[in-house]
Image (cartoon, rainbow, N blue to C red):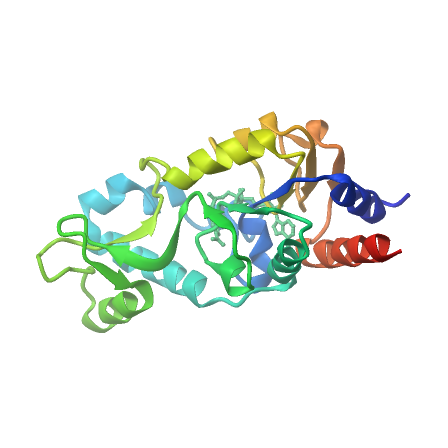
Length: 247
Ligand code: NAD
């Protein structure tokens, strides 16, 4: 049996499947990931410096000036076949939902309903002083026009509602942790599984399947490991799932 059919059979046999996605599901939407050789953000800049709590606290103006182009790119991208296939899998009861490390909201924009965003999102920014919230794209337009940091009316500096290096993970991570422990199958798509603690979800899953272009440290634990582009692979897997369940 080929790997696509094998994964479709595993998905059909599983009563409770959770997907875990990373930056690799969004590269086909034009958003660079962190670690792909040559194209990943890591080869152009140091995300740990750029997207850290320390960088924001030290110099909010520099944080926003450096981050605005990347934030705008992520917040304006369109979903691709990976996002659509995962949304269709949820609608068809093939997966329970998605745990995502992505901050681009593309799963929701493709129609996914149950999305645990364990690294936050770029829909809004919040002022830590007064709790005021603004739409991120509107804030970015103001920053570009005035060439200043995103300042709230109360005098505080807005921060994007993403988990920066140095931040605690949100409550959604606790839910993801519990769900991944009890699910029958964890389907990882487009993640290097290098970022802790999210990668630990792969370690305690009962069964693991991985679709990724590059290697991950959890490949040996996976029942099925497909090396390929997420958009094409997921589209084929969805077709195989539908075909075998209607046969
Ligand atoms: P990563 O960059 O560490 O790994 C991405 C993986 O995806 C790589 O192993 C790569 O081989 C694979 N990949 C790239 N394109 C692919 C494709 N078309 N099909 C299948 N696989 C593909 O990303 P990560 O594991 O998600 O961890 C990086 C962190 O960066 C995350 O915490 C995330 O929050 C953040 N991030 C998010 C975005 C986004 O929201 N789109 C983008 C960049 C980084």
